[in-house]
Image (cartoon, helix red, strand yellow):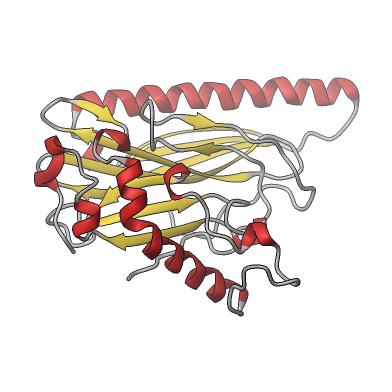
Length: 273
């Protein structure tokens, strides 16, 4: 069982989660600001060196968005990413300028707006290109929040897919639940420096019980580069632990139980790890 975590210790940041893991591809959800700690700061994870980027900076308003050549080389996907990036750039810059003008009019400090998102390749296969983005957003509130977005591109159909097009979440939940919960608790214990004890008086119950796997960001990835051999589960802050613990990202090898969850049209893209 493998467990990989990213952003293990994020500084306090404002809330926006982008997760293309079900329903329409690349859906997005907004959550409210809930804690007043530090202002937004960049994550400590290394940025990918991408071939295509859109950026703009105007004083305390900054925008960065990038994607790799693996996606830029696909005309239809490149067009979607470019359009999405331009839309986000406009929203960021316009929103920042609007809030800055309101702050100046009201006579209080403008804290700035920042949006940063960088796409990376999670699987580059003959039939499918799987990507995951990482970044963060800050819109002048008490703090900001990391961004995680997923995208699956079907090369033959020339379209984006939701994870649900490849995997039956209910079947996946049954097949992965025990391994997933064990991996989550192992990672929690690593970060906290003590075992997770459900029901313990000195541990919050909401951060010791297992989270609902089916409701998390899920995407199939390739760690060996030959086929989809791993199921990645990304859990945003506050879901599995307090904000300071950041994002939990767990990589679980594909086994026979997981293969039962793969939909017939994409069986050939998966393999047991």
